[in-house]
Image (cartoon, rainbow, N blue to C red; front, side, top):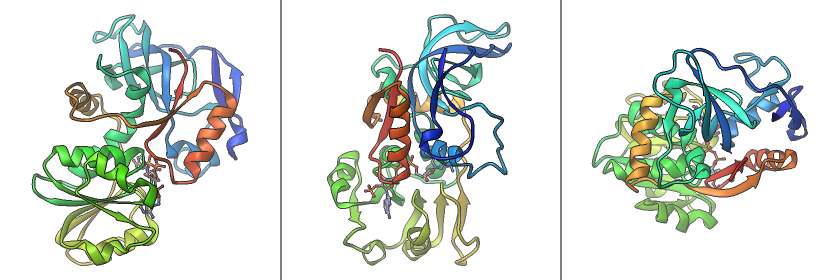
Length: 306
Ligand SMILES: NC(=O)c1ccc[n+]([C@@H]2O[C@H](COP(=O)([O-])OP(=O)(O)OC[C@H]3O[C@@H](n4cnc5c(N)ncnc54)[C@H](OP(=O)(O)O)[C@@H]3O)[C@@H](O)[C@H]2O)c1
């Protein structure tokens, strides 16, 4: 099979299309023929070697987690799935024509969305859910500020927070102001010409998908007892008394993903695919270059099969 392989840590040019063996299917795993792959910022950071001390790779390594496709083989102990099922899953090494996933990390693809849309919502929606409801403990009628609302995670977070009945503010650049409103944000602050700390006050929760100065200034908009929930790491733990902090680390969960796909089925949540690219070496490189800018709207998906 063909796969995008890296032989060393380094720049986007490390992403190479190679011929490799199909993965073996474990007893509790399924083999998925990949139809669509979502690319995530974590993958360019891993490619560069930012996580090599905590998560060292053996090379050659196939990157990628989010996948949608069709089951072509099932392991001996698999009971939930059969050959031919259309699914989405968290796999280890999804930048390939075939990948394997634990049967508990696999979810049925809703019929009303295509494979590209299905792939796009996996890590993004689970991260958004974790930041809002597990770490952030957001409830109905509370106020949440979502920084980076136009990105993969942010575009899910705005929709999920609105669906939960929260009042939602979000930040983005000028070209994304209308997009953030369309996603459901009640208030949008264009960070290129307005200071969010001057216009937003007494928030219960800030979901930080940006970090740096944006995170540090976020304490000013939180009320006492509020929470700063960051997917990019808390810079200064315990900085402000009375404010809770949470470093979000998404844990793939088939159970959570099933809950989220129900919202896609009912139309209460929609996938936000910005660009669909073919399964070619230079397209993966381009996707990584775009993700590295930190200014991607929605998701970039690689389509492997129609
Ligand atoms: N900890 C975890 O488990 C976990 C899981 C998933 C993602 N993450 C991390 O979370 C971050 C966001 O992920 P993502 O997939 O949503 O990224 P993304 O798709 O690349 O989106 C980033 C978004 O941030 C916006 N942005 C950039 N600078 C901003 C600023 N100063 N203020 C407000 N918005 C700003 C950009 O919009 P504009 O173009 O309008 O600036 C862009 O839409 C990444 O660093 C990723 O690695 C962590």
